[in-house]
Length: 255
Image (tube, rainbow, N blue to C red; front, side, top):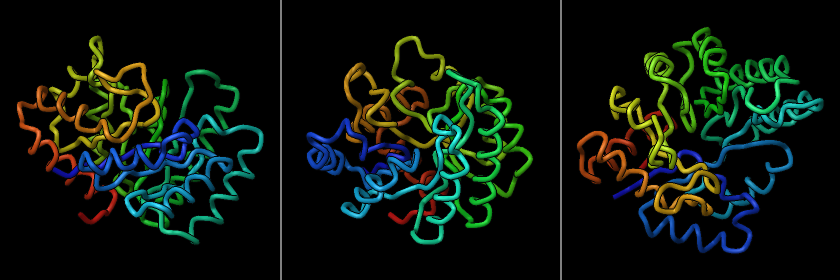
């Protein structure tokens, strides 16, 4: 079986002690690709170095909404200069995050719009980080539909928001949260066909059961997939084939 982790931070310092071993565990568990989202200028070079080492690691380019601050224009300028220099699988992770702090709300929206324009200009999908801002983000995305495609990473919205996203052709990124005992996500997915789902870990965060509370890693993708087997009444091979096909379609990959 082949799997694609559409969102994982293998270059994070949480992997400094055993990064190569974690990659080998992922490969042994059938991972064909693990896509690496960009966060800020500071994390960019470690990400690119990691992707240069492993052909299965594909980089994205972009400024995370939580990294939008007083220097956001400097960071946007940096990423705009990097865009034509390398092959990226997506613009991301970009979006809106109003959970902790709305100090730079206006700047987040501006950065989001700017980076959407990059995705359209370079014909790239977007990997979207949205937290406590789904209606605001979807309103922006609807302005650009159908010229934009991508993934709502770590989807945490409600059923109506999920339907709005898939109607525009976006996929929902599903990770370890779907395995949590009290998660409402499984109930939402019962109303969303698996044709709109891709798998992700967001490692090192949000490890699935039975690894919850520990460091997450791409090798745990099959544990997430098992939960989808229960939700959709499919076997593991079917979930592998469908979610891999969905990821290939969105990110333009070859398997």
